Length: 228
Ligand SMILES: C[S@@+](CC[C@H](N)C(=O)[O-])C[C@H]1O[C@@H](n2cnc3c(N)ncnc32)[C@H](O)[C@@H]1O
Image (cartoon, rainbow, N blue to C red; front, side, top):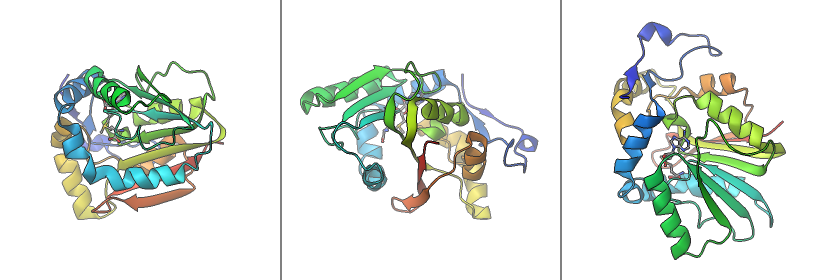
C-alpha cells in the first residue's frame, strides 16, 4: 500500500499520545522501496551517513563475546565494522537488501555475522538474548516505531544497551514545517523526514543516557539508552 498522510488534527500536542509523523507506511510499501534501493544504497547512503555509524560503534563499548543485534541491517554496511570477537545478528525485512549483506559477509569472510529475514516489530528471539540492540537508520522507516523499540527492549538483556541512530524532526519551527511537508515524499527514498523525538521517547518509555548530534549537517541523532 502507498503511504498515507494523516489529518493534521491527529498530530496533537500531548507527547504521550500524539502521532509521531504525518506519514503512515506499511511493511509491503517499505519492502518495495528497498527492493529498488538495494543496488544503489551503499552509494547514496554509505559515506553520507557513515560518521554517525562510527560514533555509534564507540558508544557500544564492545568486549570479546558481546552479542549484538543490528535491526534493519540492510546491505550489511556496518557488519565489517564490528570486532571479529563479538557475535553479530543482523535482521532485515528486505530480501534484496539481505542478499547484498550476504554477499558482503561472504566476500569479507565475516564468520561472526549471521543474517536473518525478520520483521523488527515481531522478532523471533527469546527475551534478553543480546547485550546490545542497535537500530541504525531504521526507526523512521517502520510502520510503528514504538512497537519496534519495545521489541528491541524485550530482546536486550537488563543493563545492556539500546542504541537508535536516526534523523528526527527539527525543534526549529521552520525546519519542522519543511520536514512535515516533505515527509510523504522522502518515504519513497526510504525514510520519513519528520519523526518526533520527544514523542518517540515518551511513548517508547526510553530514558537516554545521551543524545548526540551526528553526521554533516548535524541533523541526525544518536540515542543511547541502558536497558532497565
Ligand atoms: C535506511 S536502511 C539502514 C541500513 C543500515 N542499517 C545502515 O546503517 O545503513 C533501513 C533498513 O531497514 C529495513 N527495514 C525496514 N523496515 C523493517 C522492519 N519492519 N523490520 C526489519 N527491517 C526493516 C529496510 O529493509 C532497510 O534495509
